[in-house]
Length: 344
Image 1 (cartoon, rainbow, N blue to C red):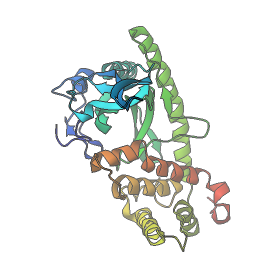
Image 2: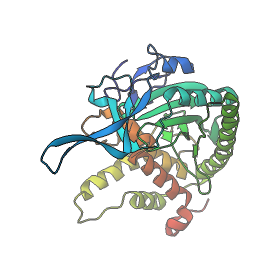
Image 3: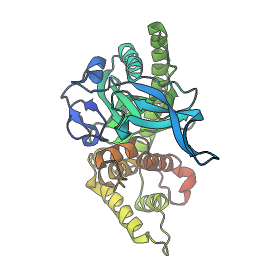
Image 4: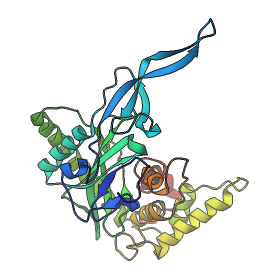
């Protein structure tokens, strides 16, 4: 299965491997291929078991008791003695949504939209499972094109409900954007249902939200691509985004990051000669995105590898947060950086 994300993770990607995770199939694929053992290997199931704890009784004897109010989600494909079998403690009423159920919802969205399965993978040794759909409609900001992906995300640790997360990816460099707009979210809860007719209706609802969001997002990034900036603006933007305390412990490191991103903006990023990028606010946002996606140092904690840590950061963690901050700063610069704005 290629190198893994976590040691018990499985999955498959199309020809665009997201940050070198797992094996690449070379083409889009079906829901069944994502689940099959010889494909994405995501057909494993999740159950719940009692949590047992050893306690010392008043008479000094040792007794194993069931912890009330909680249970443990477990991977049923792994043996009892595998520590990765045990996923997370959850409430007593928690009922897991199986990977096959999430895949059914992803398939309903694909059928209703003409989308294709582009990637399907688990993370954190199965605690999170993602089915990534490539939607047929792109959005543009002048001469810059972004492809639209929808992540159907399922979690087996109680941290999330079944969700649809809109992600846009620049064609020229494959930088990822998981953005929200003021007054418009890009994450939607999916109502889980076993009924095929209801799944179709739910898919149509999600696709309507996606279309509405992308129309607004396209307008915003086109506006950013049309707004030229001068050196004073650029300096103020990066100082606000990467503030430095001269007496701080990491001042030198922060200045180094700022310079790295500035170099990307000044011509080092992919697509730097595009009208939408050269000397614009959208170019500033994309310089930060390229830094986050390809150059930023990622802390790897015990039990994870670099590829998983980077993907988690880009899609859900600090990397995604930094991109959102950069985007919002560019959008709201009229208020936040008003002293150095250049007129169009």
